[in-house]
Image (cartoon, rainbow, N blue to C red; front, top):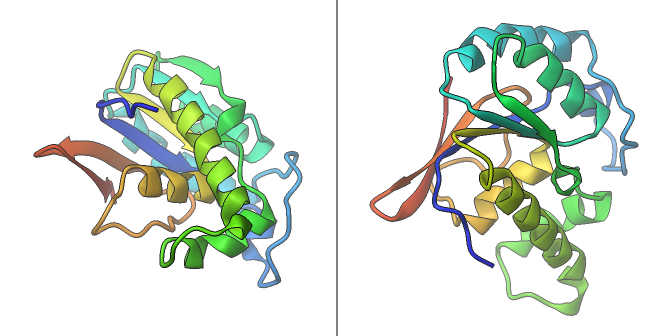
Length: 179
């Protein structure tokens, strides 16, 4: 599949109570809301997002991403589209991520491969819209985009509500946090 050659922005949703738990990774239901900190994070970055040249917002339909989108897109006149392919990965994929990059693929890596294929579809769908596009999704989606785009010099794990600019430089993808 072809990777669109267009700059875009990415934002992981605001914090949830699940993000605070220091427990084994579990599958999170799609209905998890932002907590008070997550709402505060979204409101804090809204002025930054309002200054970006965003033409389209594509977001995960999971509640935490939807709530983040509603708070940060207040002043944007951009078109907005939910994309199910931008939904978070399973707990199994989260568990396989750290070692996946470091070794050859095996049959046990099929969940990661399927997840990356789904994210690539969502990414292609998002960048088919007028850009620059803002993608509001999840930590696993950020990790997958970094993997798909072969990003180096940028942490593949991102914090809640930290806007990231993805762009091409000398034919290679780069990513930088906006703060």
